[in-house]
Amino acid sequence: MQKKLVVEKVEKRDERLWLICDHPPFSLEQARPKNHMLVDSDNIAFIYILETDEDFIYVAIPSEFWMDIKQVLTDGTPIFLQSGTIEMELTHFKEELTYLIENIDGNANYGEQMEQAVKEIFLT
Image 1 (tube, rainbow, N blue to C red):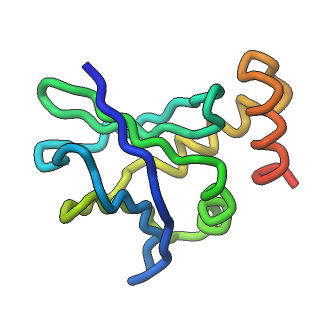
Image 2 (cartoon, rainbow, N blue to C red):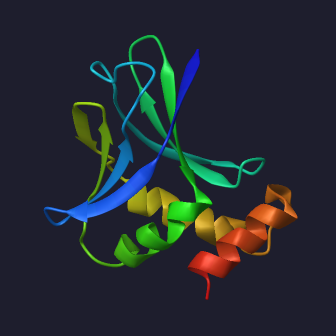
């Protein structure tokens, strides 16, 4: 089974980039990073996957926050998730996102809107 969180805002503080879900519909207390990302072409978002013993949890990062992420992709700034009171580093985020960006460029399988959005933010 999968659950989904949508990032509501992004903040840079404490030398980290924070993806924030202020009002999560469930706890991430047992969640851990899966070190894998997917693409949600329908909603023009990247998905970072968390897992528990029973579930996968999709953390959707809408395109409105991609510019913030682009700014830290090449430096050493770690990316963290804050969901309610739970905080965790999203390990392998940069490697996974870089792979997806390279794969999306020129690849019609992701849909024209997704490809265009990625080009506008990450490939210019």
